[in-house]
Image (cartoon, rainbow, N blue to C red; front, side, top):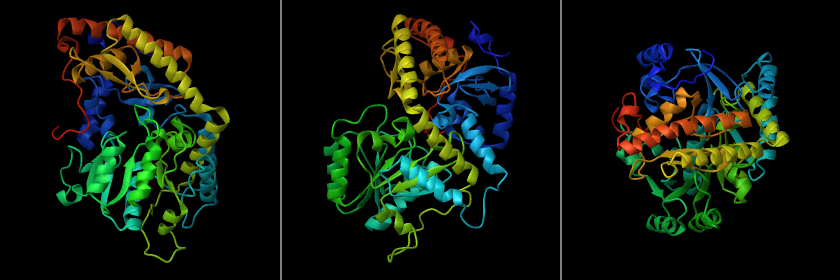
Length: 447
């Protein structure tokens, strides 16, 4: 089968994917290497295992083709197997990938990054976002001499490391003494943040947040945080894993004009290749270097952090974004999709239950029940109908490989899903349309 598209969701089965999922669970804890990719995030029996992808499409091991959204957890923003990125990667593969001394590509990649994100003065590369964000926290603690970390409670994820994961429901194995050093502040509320900094006066090393999320920052908010951080002597850290490139080539800091002390990038930076970056003020970053007289900070030291092919991919991504206007294209595609989904939901009488949120380049959706409360059951119903219509969409985050026909086809499938959603609302019970257990949240205490 080349493409999915069945009128009866109960007739749609994925026997090879099911078998592959069983093999995964036997060998890999959780059945995936990222919890957000687990089969518990999908309707029972309908978690496709991917064979390959090209552009905006992926194929599963059963031979079904899907339009894919949220590609690689937002990392593949140019589409799979992007030719310009692959050309840059292939060019380096025959030249060796990792040496006992820095490659000249490391200085070229640093120059390219700092030209793209001119608010930063130094950069250090690594392989994943958790490492660079934890490095930012360590650096902030070192330069301030303080131990507490303040994170935005309205943003879902910052790092796999203890300082953050200890604050989630999956805190098993993390000492309470570590967790107690992390405190939280609400997004958009400067007064509450100032109260927190006053309560823990001279204890908070840094404020860590995504500069923007599913809502735009209130007017003056980011500038207000900058002033609070300066006045209370703490380091302002922007997690730009998602906002990087999708808000502007220079991230949210480039769009809103507020300069953090440190910022972290990843995801879209490599278009699926593993590369992340810690960037920031020279005065702070140099504490992890060799040209200062203070105590040295073990900032980042990774065997594979500067693999040449990944840095080449990052440079190709940055060139593509700046030369081809990718961020504007992502916004245009997202705006078309958001308008279409909203119209389809309203047309089926579920406009207050299937809700599209977020910036056009980073759309998510909420599935609300009869009382307009978030519902995993209704999310299951919705995902099930999308999958059987050939749309793999844990979110509606677009890639630039989509075209207008892809968006229009997605809206058609959404309309079909909304028709079933309406039936479930009228029945007051989505259970008959679930096909099994509901999908589950990533962060939960028990399996």
